Length: 315
Ligand SMILES: [Mn+2]
Image 1 (cartoon, helix red, strand yellow):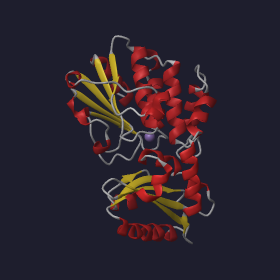
Image 2 (cartoon, protein in one colour):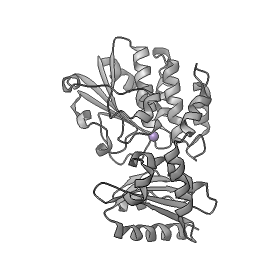
Image 3 (cartoon, protein in one colour):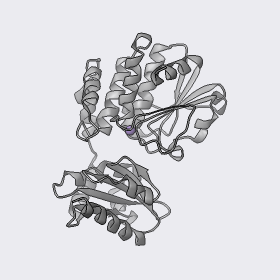
Image 4 (cartoon, rainbow, N blue to C red):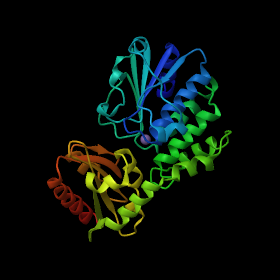
């Protein structure tokens, strides 16, 4: 039996379905979560579908998460989308259901769930949710709001169809989603917009990025640097792609200071695979987009040296 069919059979067995996604969500995490919820609700109106996780004001245009009581987990099917590692799941009650399904497109380093559907080559989890719909089309109904959410997720994770993960299948899925009743340009516009503090921070990024001869680049966003911009750690994610616009930059790291004064590393690459390096610093992710941590400011230069060596070797 195809995995999509197995997942559908599991959904059919439960009256309550609770969908989780990762912490510090991006449009794909929310788009796949809310899009799947829309798909199940429209297809099975008698089922109760709930979305777990912290609600962010900046993502209200993609819907709202639900208040979920502990008791609701007892007889629920839990589906975790877009989340590679269990510590990253937003709301740790995801283990409290009767059954657990993982649907994701990150490398499957942390295997969990009674059913796992992981496609590391897919552009986004939203693309997979569309594939799930498409392979069970005769039994499922995708409403326009669901299509809008999935489109938003694909646009988010592909950098508006720019990253190499954008396959012909991704474009095919986007084209099919675009036939639904919503404005693709509105979605593209919202995802491209930044507020004024973020515009100012973008200027800071370009002014202060250190670019090494190898093509490795880095920037440290300490509390002191970020303070005047009045931005949260979540907002710094929007500036992470910016160094990639510079022709000479091959791979780059943005260090963001955390409450415990460790630095979260947001690591990106246009060529050399950087996820193995991320793993040696307690992180992981995609070959061209990963995250890691250094425990203090003193260790930033160790990481920069390793990144520089890796990029230089790949030249
Ligand atoms: Mn994703």
